[in-house]
Length: 299
Ligand code: AMP
Image (cartoon, rainbow, N blue to C red; front, side, top):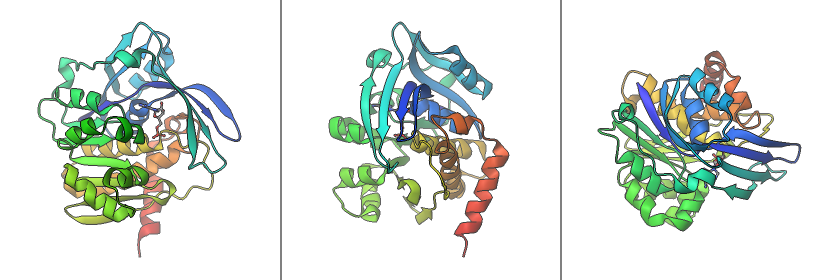
């Protein structure tokens, strides 16, 4: 099965305390699509400028990512720059240059509208809604978000959440959305907005899946060194939905495993700038970490 991924396609400049890397392939949809491509085919939706390097499009295509839904518009590709503190959990956005993204009005190619698994990666909720409304009969709708939309587009986000099956957000966002000061209560209260399944990400401390089967506490893969965590959340969501689309046995039965595969792919993402490490990773590397994580969480 294929998954549809919509979100940002970006050229990121990432500054850590140790190094700076300019104009890396980034964006929520790029990270999510590459992560999903380990498990399933991907129909990618997004916009890019004429300056977008051809080698990135080749990378997508080489990984079975369909780029028919990418609009190439006159103007510049979305650019984003951030600075990480010594504590890599803390970062500041230095600049966001929307470029062609400012006029993005996604229209799905006909070949995409029957896609059953939909991942609405982080972009404005109005755009996520616009894409979702064009998909004929989705079997699973997963959405991610960021604090910016909680602050500037809450009514749209609430409208979207009524149509979402699995909502992925981080601990701070869940607390902001619900007004709760405890992550578990925040996860539980998030269901009231619509999603049956809620996944709260807690960075290096793993994630919590809350749903009709109760709580599942998924560990993060214990890394000795983080190089650049940019896109880890997007990789998590991409791998999760990709795994569900690429695996037989039903969504509910495979959900916990999909969350663990999400953690594993996110861990590779953190080990290199942009998606350098992710693209150098093999399915065997992923399976090895999955098995290690499974063993370390059993008692
Ligand atoms: P994450 O580290 O999971 O928060 O994702 C970082 C990615 O999100 C980067 O590759 C950015 O290009 C992208 N990004 C940053 N700001 C935005 C925004 N306002 N809308 C969409 N994508 C964004």
